[in-house]
Image (cartoon, rainbow, N blue to C red):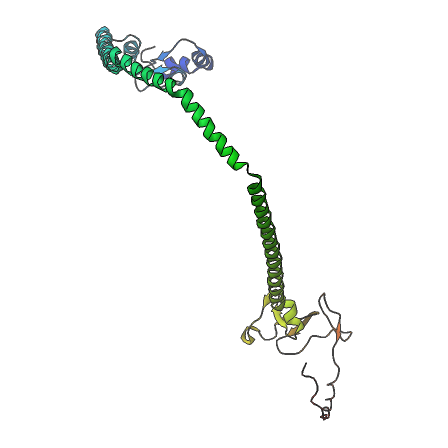
Length: 280
């Protein structure tokens, strides 16, 4: 702590050695350097900052009356807590006492149980012999050999019939699955783009985009017509670009196609024959 002063007077509390010593101190430090508006580096390294030395003294040494009042308050709270705890234990103990059964009722219950066991013990030998005789009769009835053979034969017939039904069901299910699979494979194959191209259809592409309408074919745009065996580049005006060697470039899947130099001659229509011929 130090009273007010000029910046030069308080500069000693900004020295590194002083600040490090304050930070490394094991004893709690209260810094009170200068007045309230003065700030030094030791204020940040100490445990508590006070605006003035007087305030630091008040923080370090509390008022005795306040300490006495705090002690009295804690004492009152401790006494009240102990009283509540004792009351809770008293109520719990009274509940346990009420839950303990009376000795007379315990003895009476045991006497009744003993009388019942005594009566059962008197009747036990005769009852046991009767039960064993009945069990023996049931076993003898169940050990009838003819009935056992008949039951075994019925079980074998039922098992054979069940096995035959299961076998037929599995064969029928497999055949149905094969038929459904072949039909599904045929449907998938029929809608395959490759099969559509093999039937004579083509796909017009502009780059990797499929041209689906004539209006989408921009004039003079470079297009590609995809056949079943490859692609042929064309232009929207209908003229096919031809290389200097007279061949049209074709993508993988088909060979080069020679551009026609002259218009091919029309073929003469075939003469009708007398027979109808095949429709396929």
